Length: 58
Ligand SMILES: [Zn+2]
Image (tube, rainbow, N blue to C red):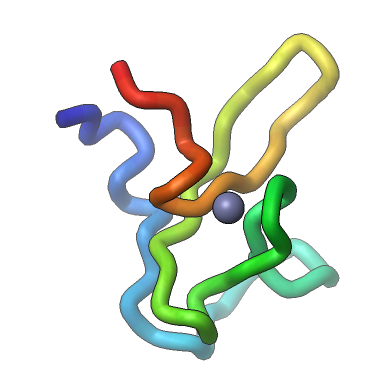
């Protein structure tokens, strides 16, 4: 299991975050409010947020 970005998992819907937009999966749009853990993934085109379902398995 990858734990590199594990600290981005947010069990609570409320989070102090610098991002203005709500944290949600860039693939399906679901977020912590839907019970998903969201992780940031750095790509060539920038950082994206992905839920547990869409985060690439290692
Ligand atoms: Zn997703």
